[in-house]
Structure formats: structure tokens, C-alpha cells
Length: 315
Image (cartoon, rainbow, N blue to C red; front, side, top):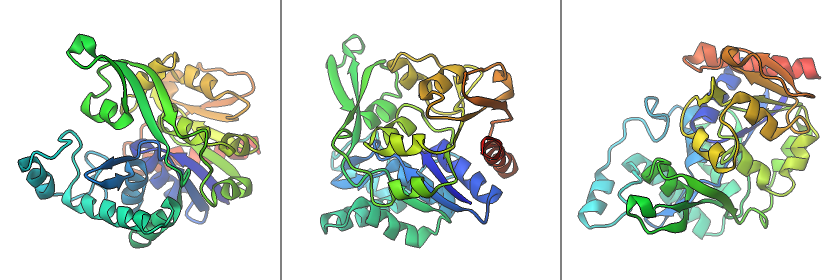
């Protein structure tokens, strides 16, 4: 079986680990979100790609779901002693090495897809990980923080809104800078075309999966396939993170029903929801309720297996 999954960070990475366990013989290609990518300390940081790579490669900090296990922060502390920021984005010493290698390779002329492949040679994630594009696409958020004593209405990088502000200042809008002119990375469209099924893990539907689908050509390719999605919302609240703040920014209710309607039956054919949301109905979309909490490896593998079973029903 050939499976393609569109993935963001923590939720997507953990689902993929379950998918790998549920379908050990499958050929799995992961198209990773790069809209969260940011340049810090002169280094190119790709949070979602690295979270998938570390999680599947056995190097992730399991407790927090991002960053490296056994991490130290000497370099960060030394930078702060020099007054060099930003202080709100914490890169660990082990993590710095990944970003140094990536930045050196990019500066030497290698595209991000080739760099990602080279990094994965070390981690052996058991899947093929491809960035959605080799072009620079960044998610920016328009906010007005004047009431909080800030600078007023302005656009900031998604990471500043997400990490520094913790989405505490409402987003007026979300912009995908560079997306319109981007091209899918080599192998993206080919993998989708060859796939037996495309899966949407419980990643953020706006700034993870939505960003990947914004790259010209990707949505059309995915729409032609059997697609099964897993709701990132349980009982009106995100399973993890702040997807509700992103949904509010685009005028969508935080519910499994609303996210299903956001994707639409022309894109998503099957939709897995939590048992608490078993009443979700979308015409043209087959909905099944299953336990969605990825509380342990067995539960996560069972969820991935449920997604594949639903894909089999649809086929």
C-alpha cells in the first residue's frame, strides 16, 4: 500500500508513528508543512519537519512533543548573556546542530527537499519526508496589540504569535506569504498521484494542512484521491495546541463538524471523529466515530488503523 500523509507538528508526528506501526509494510510519504519555518540566529529552522523527523527517528522530547530528548541550553544562555535574541524561542544545543547543517547546505545551493533527505539519512524515520515546497513560504498573522500595550496593528511571523504571545492576542487574519508563487517540492505531486490513500492526521487544519494545500497544484492532486481525515477537535476543543485561535481567525467554529465542512466533501471523503462528536454529519462525507486520543502507542496505532479501514470502505 502507498500512503501519503499531510502533516504539521506534534499531532501529525505522533499519528505518523502510529501509522507506521499499523501498516509496517506500507510505503509512506509524508508531505510536511514549511509555513512555520523561520530564520533565527542566522539559522533556518523548520519546526514541523524536525518534529516529524525527531519523533519517528527516536530523538524527540516525548514530554513536550517538540525539541530533542536530553537537551541542554548552554548556547541559548550564552546568546542571552550577549543580549542576542529572540529570547522567546528556545533552541537547545542538540537542536542547533540540525539547523546549522541545514543552513550550511541551503547556503551551498541545495534545495530544502535535498537537505531534508540528507538530515533523514541520520534519523531513519521509516517514511519518506518531503517538504511541501522548496520555495520560501511563511505564515504571518495580522494582530492589533495596542490594548495590551503593544505596537498596534501589524503583521508578525506565525511563530511569534504562537510561541511568544501564545495566541493571546486575537488574529485578525492569517496570510501565507509566498504561497501563490510556490511550486510543490520534487516528488510531492508524484507521491500523491501514486497513492492508494491520502491521510490528514489531526494536525492544525488552518496553518498546517491548510498551508500545504495552499501550494499551487497540491489541492487539485489530493482532491483526485481517496482522502481520510482525523478530526483535531474533540467535543468543541482542540486536542492539543491552539487550533481554536486559528479557526476563529478565519471565522470557523471550533468543532469537528465545522472543520469537516471547512475541508468539504469534494476534498475529504472520510472523516474520523471522537465518540463525543458522533452526531457529525456532512453530506457526501462518510463519518465514523472512534477513540481519537493518542494516549499510548497502542491507541495511536489503533487510530491509524481505523483511518486505513475507513479508506478501505471508501475504496
